[in-house]
Image (cartoon, rainbow, N blue to C red; front, side):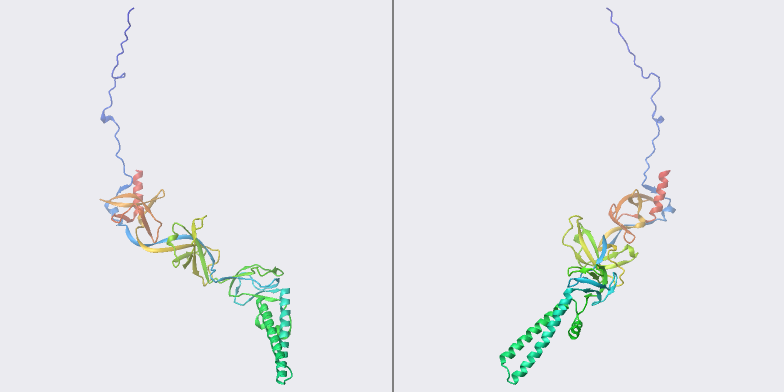
Amino acid sequence: MGAVVIVVLFTGGCDGSKPPSSNQQAAKKEPVELDIITLKPERAQKLQIGHPELIDLANRLQVPSQIEVNEHGLLFHVSTYLTGRIVEVLAMLGDKVEAGATLARISSPELTKAQLVYLSASSQATLAEKVAERARLMLDADVIAVAEVDRRESELQIARAELESAREHLRLLGVDSQVLKEIAKQGHILPSVAVTASKGGVIIERNIAVGQVVQPSDNLFKVADLSSVWAVGAVPEQVARNVEVGQHAEIHVPALGDVSFDGLIVFVADMVNPLTRTVEVKTEVDNPQRKLKPSMLATMHIQDNLHKILAVPGKAVVQEAGRDYVFLVQGNNRFQRVPVELGPEIAAMRPVLKGLVIEQRIVVDGAFDLDNERKLVELE
């Protein structure tokens, strides 16, 4: 059987074309550096060149706060010492009252009973004084014995003690000394007693109405002296170590516009709130015109000690896609845009966190126009 041999011939190309030469390949464009721009000399001369600079800067910790009543002796509650019914209310919410002012009047069976006891004790004391005086005269006339005089003197002392006890009880119920004298002199019973303010201030809370039955445990009024208030805020535990009693703080209240108040930190809590991981801080602020009102929202700016920090002017910074950039001077009218990390602007300066050193030359004024030039070149 004969063998069949298949011969396959391979050629260099089925279409006979030649491979392209190097000069026929598409020319590649040179890469364009988008962050570098070269200006004409007359344009470059309009830019202001400088260096990052070291400035004195104090850390300003911003703490959301709220205005509250100063509780260091400037806030007190008004209550009554007896159970009774309110028959008159003289003070309204927001009224400014003086110390000793009558805020309301209360009627009570306890008051009536205490006055009867006082009148009885007053009569007994007067009678005991007369009996003791008569006994002393009789002793001088050798009519009675010394023992009888001593007995009458002892009864007088007991009567006086009972009168003083009854008088003190009425004082505790709100009856002043002048009224006590009138009660003893005229023998009449007061229908009601005054509820008074022990100190002057502004009534910031009222919890009574005419006809209401109240007890000694009830807080009828809350009175505050608003000539000084607190700004109370919560400082994050990470920076609480830098906050101390005696530091000054600047208080800004948005409701009062572009006005700030100087305050003094009077309290830094010893405990961290486990839910918010913050430390409570209270700042005392003078409020002579009563512009600051309790429950107003505020911001507490706590100043730290001055220290040197590298910073650049705000005009040296441009932004793109949420990032900050400055332009470095490269020489021969060339400028390079570089990213930097900066802190919030303070007094027209931006603290440098990362990306610059003091020896570098940068565009300190005119960076915005320079960046526009760079963007035009990028679009070409």
